[in-house]
Image 1 (tube, helix red, strand yellow):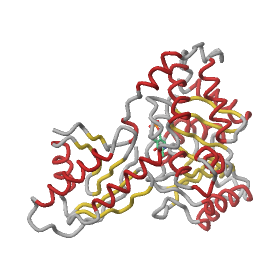
Image 2 (cartoon, helix red, strand yellow):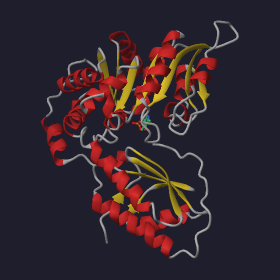
Image 3 (spheres, protein in one colour):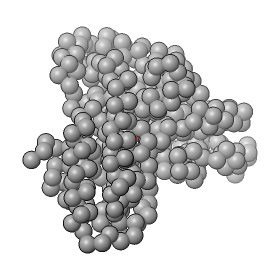
Image 4 (cartoon, protein in one colour):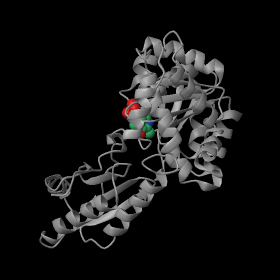
Length: 360
Ligand SMILES: *Cc1c(COP(=O)(O)O)cnc(C)c1O
């Protein structure tokens, strides 16, 4: 029996022994009093990497995004967002429920971008009939797709010209950075370049970077002061959180450039599936592979994989995510299991087109 290969998400990673040691050794204070040195060090570092004045450590990406939306917008304001963006679709409607912020969701293309013309047309005139359009929120990577620098430049300058602020949901900013070498000489420089288009950016430490918990919101001092108030109200004021911040700092130090390995593993999986009858790779960008499966066989394939220690998510279309606890042997095992499944199927039927899957 092969050891388990968990491709459900890059959130499933266990902290490495070195990361655990860094957590054990972290000097701690009480971050609600603002005197936890490990939290302060992390916030200074991620602010520096993203080129922002300040940063705030948060328990989750959801809270980072919500604090950002609430710091940018007031009650009765509106934010423009992709129809399948995480903040709109997968965060419980927090902006509307807790922020009294109206989302204006717009159609996205296959790589996550919203047409500039549609952004422009969705910005409401200053008229009491309408919510006040305040903010454009983009997501990079989206479903594993990195956005082009041209698009980021055009969309954010359109927003700025029309008086909107800009926020990037950069839960996987560093995957985008590694996949956009033209943005900078190394991954941190590329991350800074990408973040530079936006007023604020949230990043997750608990995804590909491999920390157990945590996210940061980065932006101007004024914006972060507003976010601090919301974070406290939302229950995100943590105490000896330096023990978690130390894991995130370790991840920034040691796990950024290695994301390229995760991307290579995703390519290995996609290429291995290329010849397999019954599946077709829909997209394999950065560390996420989406696969369409022949008629109705998604659940059976998932169950077959689980029986052999390979975990993935999806129904009609499946999603496989690579990360630091997966290696080439694990990917090859997953490929062997998928090939075995289809070789046991009587003549595979047509491929089902899957709806877009959730991204957790
Ligand atoms: C995971 C994710 C989030 C939210 O992060 P949590 O820590 O799970 O709350 C936000 N945006 C995107 C794009 C994500 O993938």
